[in-house]
Length: 428
Image (cartoon, rainbow, N blue to C red; front, side, top):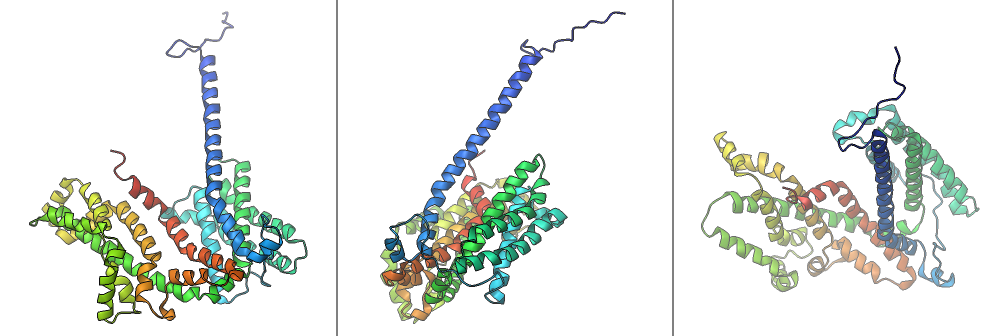
């Protein structure tokens, strides 16, 4: 029986041949890859524009200003004073702190690079991720020792030792990144190299220069930062709590003149702090609260902005939810704690970040109610550092960079909640 040597031609719905369709698919895949590459290139360029000023500020912090003048304003740090240290130098608290920071950072990088989830924490117990986290931290602590010694001695071998540290740390990360689905070994090696480069550079830059220690001790940043942290936490808790309760009342409760009271409540946003400063300051002095924490916190225990934002989130809840909870016997407190707040968590989290940043950056009011240097907050200390002699201006810049670390940590931790809060209601 004779067979037909011609293979059947597969046609698409529009009558085109299968070869043409395959060619179209291949061409679309190529365009998609080119588009993805273009997007990453654009993101890298934008990140360079954003991080460029931070790099310049860091360079200014590392070098005294007169060293810049003598060197003709170079594009790299000059006259950097490096500590004679190792990773295990600086006391128990300092060693444990920096080790935990590196371990947490490597854990987060493994989560992002290997597509892990915090809810499935058992995934981090895989040997590959344990090697990346624990092994990477141990290797970094050992490999940075020769780097610190070479920088302090200025023997010219610093770059070589740092390259060795980058390679060793990167080697601990490859296995963990290679476990991710649809990721080949070359991409895993590239990601591990970037992690090794960033972690090693950050460790040396954060622990090696002496300017960070000088700025911390000279301007008493530890005590002032702790005072600002306590103030920011208390103000944030009070503002979030009072805003949730006020927003719930304006949305779910019925009482006379509710709209008028809300309008008056929102009108307080039109009054800047400078308008009420004199009256509030006189009240604080009459209560003899000068140089106290209650003077810093209580005047900011409530805010109309938080009430407005959370009220808008509560108004987006379907009325059927409250009706169903009433039938189940839930009261106002139970409905608020178990349904209203959890369902509007992105909005509450966004306002929490806004409130914390506002409290952390306060200067005018603390400067008005504090008259003794022993009660200065961080912003007041930074202002005093900026007014110091010009010969040590780089120390003031270093103090500002140290003060920005908690803000960066806050934004990184709450980045998802901030995005969800800002985009809430954008898609129906």
